Image (tube, rainbow, N blue to C red; front, side, top):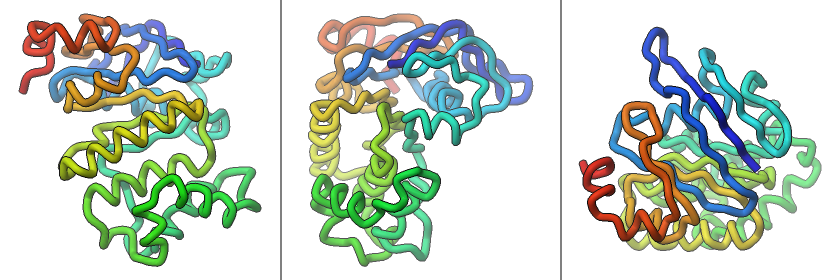
Amino acid sequence: MLKVTGLNAYYDRSHVVQDIAFDVAQGEIVTLMGRNGAGKTTTLRTLMGLLGKRSGSMVFDGHECLMQPPHTRFHMGLAYVPEDRRIVPGLTVRENLELGLIASKDRGRMTEMVDEIAETFPRLKERLHQEGTSMSGGEQQMLAIARAMMARPKMILLDEPSEGIMPILVDEMFELFLRLKQRGTTILLVEQNVERALSISDRAYILDQGEIVHTGTAAELLADQEIQERYCAV
């Protein structure tokens, strides 16, 4: 589904992501691990086309798209949920969900898609007419994920979905990721909750100072406390 080679990304003159290579197979959950500042969020933003200065190769679903704009990647089936969620103030949960189809060819199926997503996210179904930003942080995170799922993406990029969320909602969220995987959605996950992320992942890559320094199956990395402490401990 995704093959990245020689990827470099920059903020002004700062070389943040340095010649990394990784891949994600269709239907996998793959986690990018590492301390804050390792380059994980920059990698996701680069994959979505949100950083202007980049080089290398990114083949998504058989197409080279590293230099394509974000809306082209969206139409190809790539979705992105940023760390800050970006729920639009003043809009209801339903209206925020509808934004997920604003640039889609499926806009004519808006009501059908909202109803379908609401069945997948029971907490949101109860709050469709509530203002999105009035919900708890965990519920807003679910709304951000649901909005990304509106266009039925082939692959979704998730940046720190459990950050600042109460444990019971974290459990619900990770169960949701497994259900999405079972439905065929591919997931690339950035997550500081290492044990929880690895428990649902197939494989993982560890970033340190912009470089991939270790990779392995989720089970291997879950069992390797030394690697976790060396590269992921706060």
